[in-house]
Amino acid sequence: MMTDPATFTVNFNLEITAGCGYNCLGCTVDKNGANTQLEPELGDLLPLLEDIRSKGWRTLELKVGPTDLTTAENGFTILDDPVFGKIVSYFNLISINLAMLNDHGLKRLADKLEELIPGKYLMVGTPVTLKNMLNKKYMTQLRERFARFKGMLKTITFTRIYMTINVDSDSIRQFSDETFDAISDSNLTEFDSVEFVFTDVRRGFDNLMVAEQFKRVTRQFSSFVLDREKRVAGSHVFTRLVPRPQEGFEFTYRTGDLYTTITMVETLTIFDDKYKLPKPWTFESLIDFRENQYADTLIKYSGHPECGDCCYLDNCSRNNIPTLMEEASSDRCLFDIKNRWEPACHLENPERNIT
Image (tube, rainbow, N blue to C red; front, side):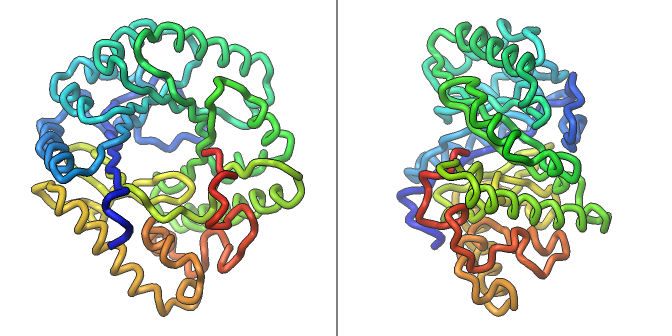
């Protein structure tokens, strides 16, 4: 077993929004990857969710994406869909994506959410660039817009904003103490956090140039995070380079299929058959799939020259990191932290993670 089943939760990411009104810098999301009409297969999640609940496990977070909900072609159609409404009823926490570049649709969205999840919890992911973090006017407008949106919610608890920063070969050049200090001082709400997303994963690694770029970027990212921790006394680590032992599973639904995820800083999904869960979807089939994936990876990499004698092999195997190494054709650790025990990657230092 990967960990004590009593601590497990199962989270789902629904990639069901089609289209987007924005072109955010560095975004590699397939905006037309979802159908404008929800597939009948979405209803197959209902008996699965009931099965999970009957086994005493928690369904905690439901993410709805991958695009901005207010400008997606089918955003409000989704909120009105009865099957989607039944799926939402199994979760206490809903996460949505909002670019928040204007007020358009926010009041309508707030009213719809109050109908859909009264008394529950809401998180919002909003894409930002490091350049915009230094723009006081932009940040002031964003802060004010979030405050207005929060005021529109009557019974829903707005728990957190995730500022999503796309990490690629362009944005990594903007990583500096100045931009990271701006993140610390953003104060969008009392509960803002940061997500770093490696956008090359969605491009796919069939293109060798993309794979090589991804490997360079991950090591540059790691180097900056570790170096900043050493240089800036009392600073927060903005992400955990070494994943925690997984206390829950996350699966991604897309166009009628369900995929297991990879956790590297944030959860990533590769839409390939090897990550696709066979039907019928049941509690046992989901957990068995992840357990077998973990065991196979642990066995395979126990003799690996880079991973075999690394103290993080078990954690990385739980989170499918070696699989991502394979996808990128890398024989080296993507973060180059084999057996390193700096505070930024120490397993026993969870309080210094703000994601």
